[in-house]
Image (cartoon, rainbow, N blue to C red; front, side, top):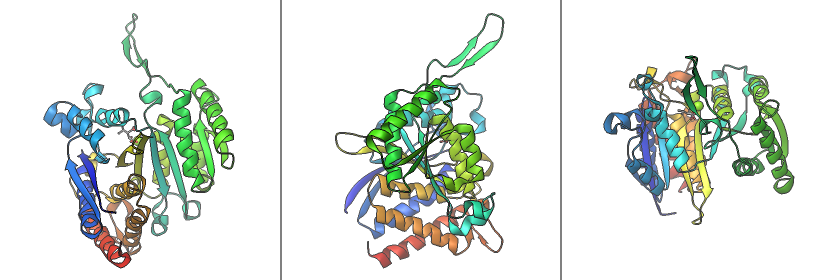
Length: 374
Ligand code: IPM
Ligand code: MG
């Protein structure tokens, strides 16, 4: 197993640095107790990069990202930058990373831990044992489509423009990842678009169908309109296995699926590129939650989404499925023992801070590692 793995750690803004210090503890624990050798290089993205360099990400950081084995990112954004032009806003740093590294496949699993069933805003029967994945296209669609911009009209009005664009290749490469994920799970894909009103949705539906017929005949495929999918997710989320969708719908639907699990603070994500000639793919791991400026700096944020993002790193970039499972198990056991950060606090549980939760999970992981002799 002895592998040197270069991680680029980009804590970013808001609660990013706090949840990243917990993940650094977990990384140290893995370095000390396994043959993994993580080398961590830390740098700036988002508002903190703007403060230092007047851009939300520098070319140097993009170059480092391209040369790393994987990126761990905390979060970007703060209301204090809302008046900046778009290209200087913190979010642009993240969008540029996704685009420049061609991280087109964004995997957002939403799994309800047994001990948190009652933390969900939905009734326990509806979410108990829920385990779904939203696969979101991340480098195309309306987030990047041209033309875009704000124009002045001759009558004094202004016009805001964004364009939803998808090509067959973009749809097929994402669809393929979706069917592959489903083939390791319950073998069911829901392809989500608005083919009733959008041509890009019609193309999406047709291409996903052709792909299924040609390459994945044994996976079940259903189409669903995005608005109906939003409704079905809160009505009966367990009907889903893998939801395959575009950038904007995926952004929205993954926030819904995350909240079903009890808190946005629980959900990790992986963003993957294509396999290159070296058979390695670029990868970035980040929590689904944002920078949460309202609770930043208070040591109360939930570090679990960040820690589970590292677990996805172990699985998808390093192919250490057993270690990834072990880290997930240490999170689950810590929850089973009744420890909770504020966002998932329940009656008769122990309220802990960000750093305490990080410590508890790390201690537990250490015990599991020693027991498992990995
Ligand atoms: C997400 C976030 C981002 C997005 C923002 C921060 C640019 O909401 O990762 O879901 O819209 O993609
Ligand atoms: Mg979002």
